[in-house]
Amino acid sequence: MITGKDVYEVFAAIVPLYAAMILAYGSVRWWKIFTPDQCSGINRFVALFAVPLLSFRFISSNNPYAMNYKFLLADSLQKVVILVTLFLWQAFSKGGNLEWMITLFSLSTLPNTLVMGIPLLKAIA
Image (cartoon, rainbow, N blue to C red):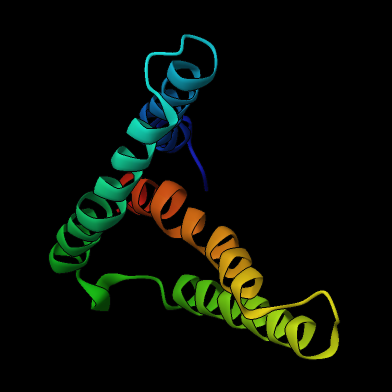
């Protein structure tokens, strides 16, 4: 049964990430604090250092034997279904190309892992 404490822990894990994303969006779009070139540099830093280190830290401290296997199966299955669907779209559509397939796969799976998955697993574990 999901309790109020569980909901609080999930929100406590997710809200700081979304607050940071909203502030980052506002600092570029509304307040013009960063230029597009600076954003490109920040994005490169995040992609090359922050995300891999966060993923490594989380994966290395995680006990895979204590995880819910149904959860792992569901997460893996949704990624396979999306990958197969995008592959079929790329193979049989004139508008489909490999670059868009990679982009859409990343957009559909990485937020589950990085933005929601790690904080949710920390909150439920």
